[in-house]
Image (tube, rainbow, N blue to C red; front, side, top):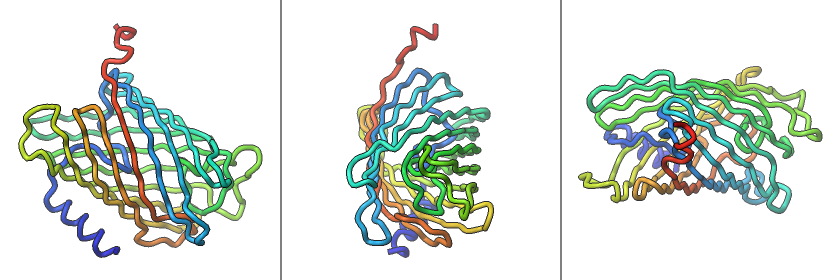
Length: 273
């Protein structure tokens, strides 16, 4: 299974004609100004101890304040307590500070920050402020586009705090980590662009890693995905995340992701004039 996934991802890297959109990470290009994006992400990860499937629902709203600044809010809902339970949420902001454009190419860089609240139990060494840990994360994203070939990478610092008033972060675990990603993609359809009503079909592959700062434990995942963009407004993402290796305890490293997105343009624009 690992060999098949790795072969597909290497094929994408070698023959990329990509759109600058990814499933598991954000590129350095922000969403357009005055665009309101609504998302619903569902993930289904198999518990390693065989106790069932870890299901998360994460509704999300994003807004482009300007061409350089966007804001995002997200809620965390899971079934860890036996039924759907609202565990918390997060606020995310991204600022694009570098934008070098040329014919059929550009290079962009952005900084981002996230603050999360979570009241679920702390059940693994992996630190994840999107759905598992209360805490914060900040980092840097760089994205290069060359003749429709997109490569994006992220480096961040992440720190976990107590989950609410009940679940203190264990003093036997490391509470900070360094995250790193590398993403590639390929535009499969349409072969020839005619208009915005055409459905775009993209394939992509992402590598997602983390290293705990205190003890050096780490993991690396591979995440192939497919993406459909419909009439430049709606988007459907389907991905599978698979652990390549890990030296830390993770409760559910392997599973599927499904996301629906719909965009509204020029929202609140009159208030910006």
